[in-house]
Amino acid sequence: MSHSFILAFFVLIELTQAIISLNPYAPHIVRCPSGSLTRPASGTLCSQESNWVKNRQAVTKQKLANFLAGANLTDFDALSFLTNTSRSINIGLAFSGGGYRAMLAGAGQLSALDERTASSDSGLKGLLQASTYISGLSGGSWLVGSIASNDYVSVDDILAQGKLWDLEKSIFNNFGLDPISAAAYYASISAEVEAKQLAGYKVTVTDPWARALSYQLLSNSPENGAGLTWSSISSLSNLKNYQMPFPILVADGRAPGTQIIDANSTIFEFTPFEMGSWDPSLSQFVQTQYIGSYLNNGKSMTGTCVNGFDNAGFVMGTSSSLFNAFILQIDTVGLPSFLSSLIKLFLLPASIINVDIAYYAPNPFYSSGGSGLLGNLGNLVGSVVGRIIGSNTLYLVDGGEDGQNVPLEPLLQPQRQVDVIFAHDNGADIGGWPSGQSLVETYERQFSSQGGGVAFPYVPDSTTFRNLNLTAKPTFFGCDARNLNALSSNPLDIPLVIYIANRPFSYWSNTSTFRLTYAEDEKRGMIRNGFETETRFNGTIDPEWPACVGCAIIRREQERQGVEQTEQCKKCFAKYCWNGDYYSGPDIGDNFSNDGLTTSSEYYNANNVEGINNGGITLFKRDVEEQEEEE
Ligand SMILES: *[C@@H]1O[C@H](CO)[C@@H](O)[C@H](O)[C@H]1NC(C)=O
Ligand SMILES: *[C@@H]1O[C@H](CO)[C@@H](O)[C@H](O)[C@H]1NC(C)=O
Ligand SMILES: *[C@@H]1O[C@H](CO)[C@@H](O)[C@H](O)[C@H]1NC(C)=O
Ligand SMILES: *[C@@H]1O[C@H](CO)[C@@H](O)[C@H](O)[C@H]1NC(C)=O
Ligand SMILES: *[C@@H]1O[C@H](CO)[C@@H](O)[C@H](O)[C@H]1NC(C)=O
Ligand SMILES: *[C@@H]1O[C@H](CO)[C@@H](O)[C@H](O)[C@H]1NC(C)=O
Ligand SMILES: *[C@@H]1O[C@H](CO)[C@@H](O)[C@H](O)[C@H]1NC(C)=O
Image 1 (cartoon, rainbow, N blue to C red):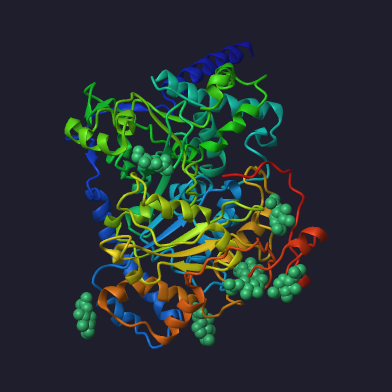
Image 2 (cartoon, rainbow, N blue to C red):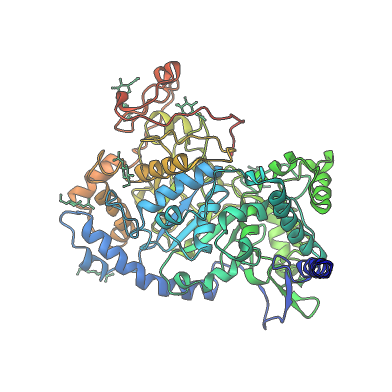
């Protein structure tokens, strides 16, 4: 008995050692590939992406043909149109931030586009399969990141299997675990983060946050994704075989002590192949697999390279780092000492303002780009360039902190040739509902020194969005490329935007951004409502909606060919395009009527009415612990 006890004791010690030295979360040394690991952005995609996209386009063309053939477009022959296009039609899907609200509403929206969804209530099925790109930030990165990391599992399967997205208990409430399991949970998170530190990397609160998050988002993977990298998803079968859109997650640059996040901030994107920024303040990319290597101008300084830094959960944790702050509320008593010391470090007044910052140290862009480039760019954006490539650490924060809560920037890069973007806005601007402000920020950014050359169609102010029903039903922006001449010398390169804002149909889907738990029925209610938002209430509000979406998708190619729109498409555009009007009166407020239009919410708010459609359908209206709403 005592023998086996001693044996167990030594096994435990060995285990602890193993946890530290072989912990899959710790980056590890590998041989360097030949050539530079960084490259100037210089207006081109990396060869891996452009090759991948070429192969993907063979698939999307077929899927788009299927969709268009079934979308009830009149006087339009989808097949002959698609056999005679000037280039591939590229669809981009963007999913905004907004915590679990955004993840769940986005899941419903995404499932309405997925041909694998069992429900026959969506006329948009197959568009996920016809899309070239899919982007996410913050809560939207949890959606896109977890689905891509799980080899593009469908939302139906996630719900049926019940393993991913278990939101019944908060990750900060130890999942409601008993004390012993809770201790094991924190011990393994602590060991993982400590192993990264022992391997020589600076860690921040983003590390335990990312690990905790992975227990919900990567729970299908060994050790909850401790060893799963963002770069490795390119070898999962659906991505490898071009069956799914190319995933891109977004984060912002922010140096410690600098509070300003605005149109001049650097926007970073993470693809399975590359990480970096198109913005003039960096204009460099590094191979995602090798971030964590000690590089000087793209060359290893040590003779070896590093893999494993680009942990998939860490990338999602970076994109959603705003939620890090929750970690500071954990009672550190009883936590493993490493974890409690790390947390306490960030409770100090000087550090607390930096709690949302994820460290990418060593900075993969150190000295990247050489001095000639530096001089030119230095004139353009002052010290920002020097700050990024001159720093030993790259500092990244939540992708929504610049106010662009919908991750549009990667889809606007002209070299990606995106024709149409589904901009899913599940943000909480007013009363927990979107106000279009995110699109306003993206529109304005093109006129800042950082955004030069990346055009985005005209949009009105958020007062107009709300009061002219532009958040109440899907709205198209940039319907006529001819009207965009002032924004770009190649207006046909500016994508048409299909804006779809969160809206209640069968569920009060404006839950708090910082709400961390959802019961199973609430989770399903959110997802169902997202599905209804995407489909115009399952096609009941407008049976022609799939045809109108088809009109939007083919629009740029028709313009390239000088083909006149059909009468049906003209009617669709009259119905869904922003017509250029502005609203400047008093705020009318919300009335979530059956047609999805806006009049007044006073009645609902005053009477706390449980329902919409004048009592037709009951909403699950719940009292939610309220926190300050912001993205
Ligand atoms: C498509 O077909 C039309 C008419 O047959 C032709 O005028 C046009 O040039 C073709 N477009 C392309 C891109 O081949
Ligand atoms: C809309 O379709 C979804 C998916 O099939 C379904 O769950 C939901 O009940 C439908 N909504 C209505 C109002 O029928
Ligand atoms: C097209 O019209 C048919 C007949 O009205 C209908 O059954 C079908 O659901 C429609 N398809 C779409 C995608 O709306
Ligand atoms: C961005 O930087 C430019 C040049 O330094 C400056 O003129 C402009 O005001 C900045 N824009 C914002 C939104 O800070
Ligand atoms: C959700 O919207 C309803 C209707 O406008 C409002 O009464 C409620 O306070 C909102 N809830 C949240 C959490 O913002
Ligand atoms: C917005 O919706 C309301 C309610 O249906 C309607 O009265 C109003 O005319 C709509 N406004 C616009 C600009 O369509
Ligand atoms: C909401 O708007 C609809 C359609 O305009 C209208 O019939 C209904 O009376 C309004 N409800 C409230 C409570 O204002």
